[in-house]
Image (cartoon, rainbow, N blue to C red):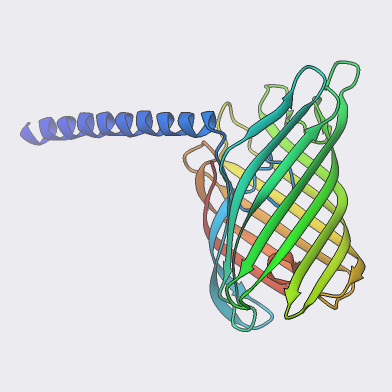
Amino acid sequence: MKTASLSIFFCFISIAAFSQVDSVMKKIYSWIDKNHISLRKSFDGSSADEGKPASINWNNDYQNSLVFFTVDAGLKISEISLLNNSSSSLIVYPKAEFHRDDTKGKEKNNLGGGINLEFLPFPITSRCIVVPLVTGSSDYKYDFIKQDGTIVLKGFLSLKGNKNFLPGADTRDGKSRLILRYYPYTGVEYYTKQSGDTVKSASMWANRLFVELWPIPSYAKQYFQVIFDYTYRKNLEDGLYNGSDFSILTISANIYPDGNGKFGFGVDYTVGDDPTNNFTRVEKIGFGVKFKL
């Protein structure tokens, strides 16, 4: 009888503690949303609505038979609305990013910061259901391994809609559950670096497709996410990387046990030319924790 009473007592204590933790977390998330703070894998000139989580991964490099760890995290610090009316909107936000990779011979360790912008020149209405979206960024990235810095400027044109299956729209099923979001991009990237007394630069035409799937929809919950992210870069002028054209593909599958899409774990497969590491060729699969705000 005493054992049963103790079990019931501890059960109530556990429920009360969980309720308190859940209440605190809701307050924290509310404060984060109110202050427009976001944590993602990267804010590389793309839309802030992209749901790619930051990650700490254990990886296997198939090309070199190596095991290593990587960290990819970008923090959107705030958001400033310079133009927000019935006809158009313009927001800018400062950001900071950290990327680290301990692959032998392909190490990277860089920290950067900059400003992103998103511009919607026209309103989305019942008659104009998809409109152009302009995104851009200006960044400075410091490479701790090579001990030099690179200035990166990007400008992209995308689309944003308000109906199912349109670019930039939250596509929902018949029960209003989120199942799909995607963005196509096309634009120009410019990289410049001071090397001694010489300034080296490269310019590229980039075409990117970002797709975010929620194949197991749930009411107000997000448990299982699949991300497809592919970029092809046409080399316009290259006095910096001495390469031809570049491409990179990342496919991710993530599980969020909390159902909030905030914290979980997953697997990433990446193959191609890594823009965060001077377009070094990589092929790797990584398992790790995922988190986003």
